[in-house]
Image (cartoon, rainbow, N blue to C red; front, top):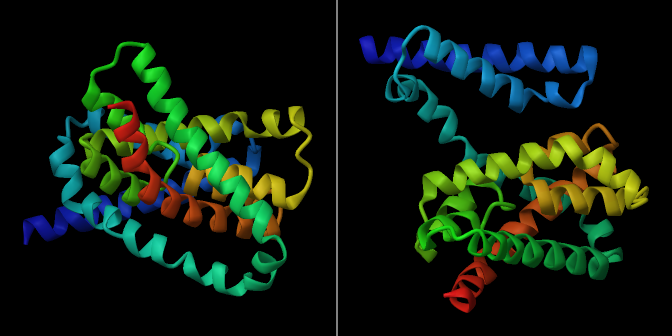
Length: 229
């Protein structure tokens, strides 16, 4: 009974903090106030302040974590709704996702190897631009650490969102197709939440790019790992 109470407490706490931080972001709209950042920081502060072990928090947090899989599957809905758009722009979408996926994996592995990181860490970094559940699976398959892969995915997503507006302006990506594919392929779900701010088409294209990037990563991730090792 106590475990059920703790689970409910931490689920409610996480959801409440997220919605509060979302209100804060809508009010001030500052990049560093993106809910995924502020919610994570505030939860860490609360756990440290009240000396709550991570394992205790995950009694409830694990149920939120388990929703990641169904959330990814649900992305098939915008894929179906936008099938006409996908057919019209099939080549640029495929080319953009393929280029983004390969660049994301190769650049991460290359820079990590140049920095002298151990093999296990390098392979955990490989799927950093792919949505968390898929990235963890890929990391486990190629010899990385799934938990570390999840951390790298979050770091890639957050850093991408923080600099996305600057990069989009610098590269003059002003079309819904360019912005949506760029955000989805490079910053997965976190970038997709940012794409919503640009418009409905950008959000849909970003979710499409994120989904296709997961497929590309699943197919090419082991190939990239094999080429470097």
